[in-house]
Length: 118
Picture 1 (cartoon, one colour):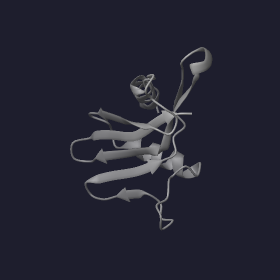
Picture 2: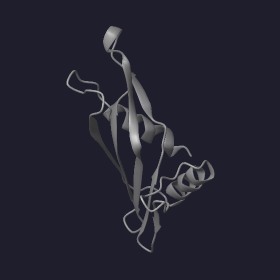
Picture 3: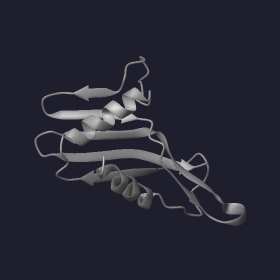
Picture 4: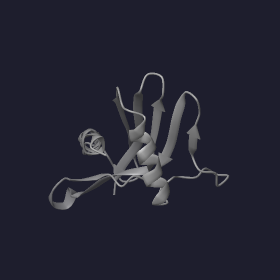
């Protein structure tokens, strides 16, 4: 639980407004966090499942994989950041969810996604 606020801040710091970022365009987010205890992504998965935020694929199957070596899931995570001023003011938000990929052997958590201007 205590790990998520710092991860959220790191993701938000990657979300940068620029004049050439137009509505409808998306930019990549990627964060690697080493030495994460397995309980953290398991807790987040349960929290997102309970809230109905786990994304589904085209076949309406939940985007969750839990194998011997990896825990991976994609969730609708409400992360955003206000940006700009005056007539350029807007919000940068994560679109199409964040994918959490946790390697059980190395304890490396990689979070990827895309953000855009809304």
